[in-house]
Length: 321
Image (cartoon, rainbow, N blue to C red; front, top):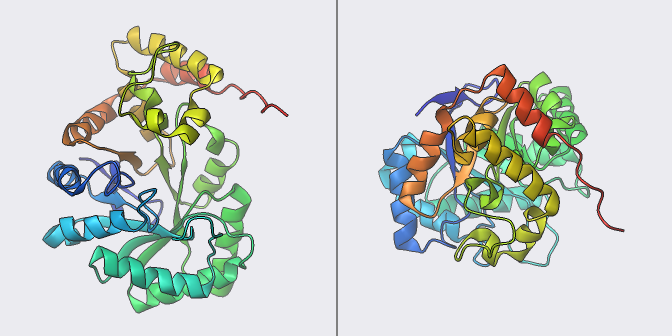
């Protein structure tokens, strides 16, 4: 599988990464083993998880990965996140206290001595960013963390964090992980400009809009059994909208006229964005790993990009009052 540098850093990652939020959740241990081993065997080197994965069994994704990677741990880039509370209903934070406690718990669950990419899961308005960055800098200097990144930060928050690191001589973020897809193009509104200007790597999650871009959903038809949108109402409400159906149907016609699949368009379009280093894609079956890899090989032309922009870069309707 092709590799790219994560931003301007020297860290190299596979262009398709494995999102591990299904590990220990939708996938029991046997299913998780099949997915993880398939990813390893097919050249995936970026494994992205979080201390709160999966929903309803927080910490289990890290635990399963720690058991399943074994000696292959040294061959991959292991990424995890902190900042959302392990106890549901409690507000998370990124204080020094939380940073220091969270890293020890993640290292224990993952069965490793270091994290390759340690990411702030979401912006914390109650903790000064300098406090968080100083704690993360200490972890890098201690050898427990190699690189640091952020997730779900606004453009100004990313730039403020980078400025703070530069001002105080601290290790700085090398990546941003955010929802980004043909149906969620909000990062185009400033975030990607900041990422590109400052040399960070973009790590899109939900590249298939939780399955809506796989081509298996149809308007006015029941949602497929076992699919994520079927059993996760909050995601269904987010993605299954009249606006998205309209965009999806136009994209399907676009693909059909070119003899391509929606899966190919979803991955190849993201990987053509100049800031994207790797696309974080989940999987519940080994064959999905191969499908995701195969889908990343379409080189879209200038006219293709212009047409996709015409279809997808339209304003979303304002939410109801």
